[in-house]
Length: 256
Image (tube, rainbow, N blue to C red):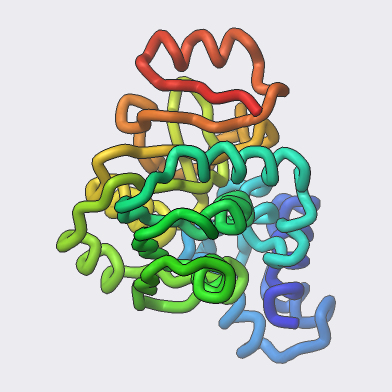
């Protein structure tokens, strides 16, 4: 219920441009304390600003609504594309590998294809990924601990970033909120961006798994440029000129 209300708050601010606390109290029938908690959380995640007069303005309306979608809802977006991307990603994993799996509904799609790869070690911050790996494969599983984000079904925060400094893995498979040629991989949460950067530093090879619906969008937080990404696995709807430019930059582009 809290997540649904926060998503609706974001949508309302998107429609009106700015709102006041008393408007939100009347709209949702909850206390000022509850609304202020919602706004403080959204502000901590870098999605809105509040001025002294109490007006609230959304920093970047499209990414916040995307980010706050329930995990189950996000899992229903681009289902076929995600499944193909997952299958292609799993082909890059070999016996003896240690891999980092990012949180995301695309990354989890590769897990069913890891069943026969042994030995294999999987490190992840995502509960959905950990559950699938633990119940469907024979891989050794290590789950990174941190602050749990319910709407992401995963852990984030400084504790994970610090622990990743001790890792050196074969490959990292990353999810994406948004990406484009100019800005590379971008996100809508400082915590998520920080963990992704730490994962990249901990890996010998960096693979980005992202369907074409994420292309051309831009979060307001830069994660890394494409110069730090070795391979992009995406679907055939990515613009040909974008693929050509990425390949010119040295990125291997796998189309599924």
